[in-house]
Image (cartoon, rainbow, N blue to C red):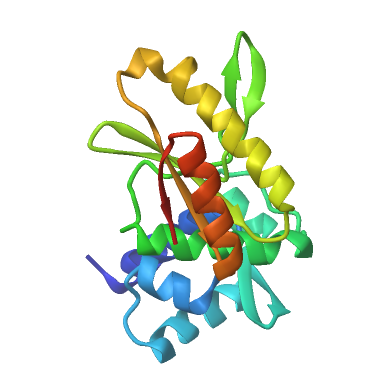
Length: 196
């Protein structure tokens, strides 16, 4: 395979990853796309930015996202920059990497009952045929988190009966105090859970 074709394929893989992730740091893309060392990753992303396939914004560090041209190239919708969502999204990406980058990882898929949206997890995937729902604890209140836990309890006892398993609820939080509160709330409701 010639160098140009390899370069185009690598760019399209990176663009697809950004479409899936929304925003990503250089370190996240380096791991997810197995781009080698930091300098090589920086060189690749810098060239893609020069070619107007991706854009970046400073947010503690440089954050990359799809440009309109990059979106058109892979046939995906563009990204509107929402700075308030960057930290939340980067945390979700970190968890995606930590969980081994599940192949069927989907972000923000609505869970419906009788055509009414009941809950929208931050991400979901299956592991050994069992559902795992991901929630990122970043800026929302503990009251909101507890309301979500109540909804997951209902999901487990009603909607998920048909799957013959109780889904696992995965939380990611940067606060030890909040992690303890999440643990207690999940245990109180008898949920399967993991907290990172």
